[in-house]
Image (cartoon, rainbow, N blue to C red):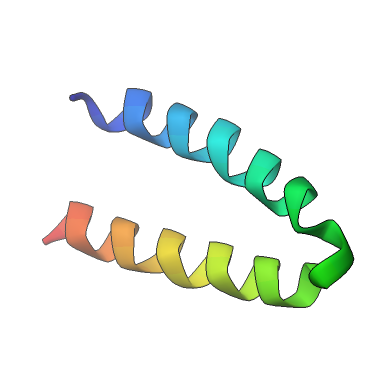
Length: 46
């Protein structure tokens, strides 16, 4: 799978998960998003 396709799917899928758990707190969601995105980018670079 190409990197851009993965990024598109990731960015499309994750926010919907965030909205699903919106009442539990956006802070947790944003932390998870940035953490996962950071790891994915680091894995992609290496």
